[in-house]
Structure formats: C-alpha cells, structure tokens
Length: 340
Image 1 (cartoon, rainbow, N blue to C red):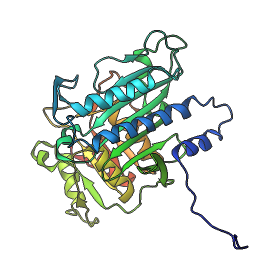
Image 2 (cartoon, helix red, strand yellow):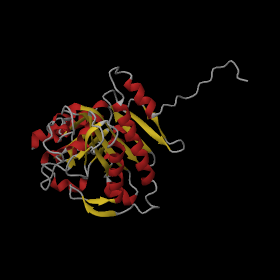
Image 3 (spheres, rainbow, N blue to C red):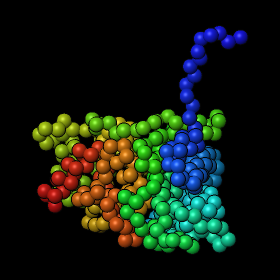
Image 4 (cartoon, one colour):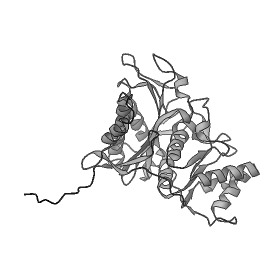
C-alpha cells in the first residue's frame, strides 16, 4: 500500500514526445516536420546498430567505388546513405533530397506524393575513421521547398542557412546521441539501447562562455595563411592577454564539434593552396552545424563572413570553416582581416 508521501520519479522524455511538445508551440504545424525528425532518429538507430557491430560483420573497409567528392566509399557510407534515403523517399513529407555521396539531387520516386520539405544530409561524417573505431556521425539539414508544386528542384536545395527549418547531427561513439534544433534552442538525446529510445539527456545546450579546447589538423600548419598561423599562436597563448587553450583533434568533424559544443572551444578547417575554396561541404556540413552553434550561443564563419549568410551556388560547394565560441571565431576573422 502506498503511503501519503509523494513519489518524485525522474522525468523521462523521449525524442518523439519532445518533438511533439515543440510542435504544440506552432498551432499551424501539420506534423510533417515532426514525422521527418522522428524518421531521422529512426535512421540513427538503424545506423548505430550497424556501427556497433562493425567489427563483427562484413561491413568494414572500402566498397570499391568513388563518390562525387573523389573519396573512396566505405561500406558503412553506403549503408547509411541508403538507410536515410529509403526511410524518407515515400513518406510524402519531402519534395527532394540531397546527399553528400551523390552528384545530383535525389528525387522522390514516381508514384509517391511530394511534400513541402527538403532534406540534405551527410550520411556518415568521418567515415575514413570507421575501420579504427573512432567516433563518426550523421549531419542533416531541413528546409522548406521554394518551388510551388511537383518534384523538387536544385534551387530548392540551394538555400542559405538563414532559411533552415531544422538541423542536427547524430554521433556514434561510446553512446549514440542525437542533437537537433528547430530554432528553439539545442537539445541532445542519448539512445538507451535497452529500450531502443532516444531519451532527453542534454536539454537546452548552451556553449560554455569559457572555452577549453581548440581543434585543428596542425599537420597542415606550413600550408596555412599568415592570418591563420597568427590566430593559432593566439589560441596557444603566445599572444598577450589570452591564456591559451588545449589542443584536441579527433579528425571526425561531428565528434570535434560535439565536444566543443559541450565544453566550449573552436574547431577550424582553413583553406590551403591546394584547396583555396576550403575542404568542408557548405550545405552538408558547415551550414547545419553553424545553425546548431548559433542556437547554442556560438558562431560560424568562413573567416570573413557568417556561414549562415552565404548563398550556395552549387550542391557540393566547399568552404573554409571556423566554428565555436563567438569570441574565438570573431578573433579568427580579426586575424585573417589583419594579415591576409
């Protein structure tokens, strides 16, 4: 028999319930975005189920083909790409999709209804690390279509980050997490494998004001511009007025960004002479993470302007990227303006 004392159980909030509660703030919402986000969470569960078994099944190594970026396609790359596409191609929520793995936009197959949203995704960021058990991730961006009706168009995909409806990422590591924003703050969910659900673990994430780490591939230092080198000296504490940060670099962008989101810091991948436009993909990597960073109080720049203000000109456009605490990214812009 229960006594009269009140029982205080910890609140358990699934990602589905959280998305639905966020939807209630918009009475005009139809539920299509809610369903789309939940399908991306489902895709994350399916991909995570394979990444955690990668050493036990025949899904390690290269597939044998080369993607549009000129990179060797890993077997898990292909699995993740097909999982996301097939979970979303028939729902009636999307007009068109775009994947980092494909040169052209991915149309919705004939016979299925066309929706009002556009999904762009990097199915498996950091896939070169798959065979070495290093954290990898999935990045996604969601827009409203610009075209009125019918199949989606390339122009529907080429929208600036300011037009984003939602963005997020999944990280597959010691645990699987999904972090997303619909412009109402940033929220993180951890997959509980015992119940197969993403549970709210990091509500309303804000980037700490006091940064801890800087993240960059310092092996390329001899190729950097003078502005980037001087900025790095600043981060190392070699300039007056700044104590300096510790270097942490994993080499999987999602993992480096995720750590700095929670601890404070800056990640950057500057242009080099062999890649004057930068290496990272504007639409699939830079823009969605810039959206998350800004919603968490941070900032992202190509070294001269806000990433979210760039009008994309091509589906696989590349960009330099500086992303993290606002003060640190603005300092990068300052050094680049001064020396470059």
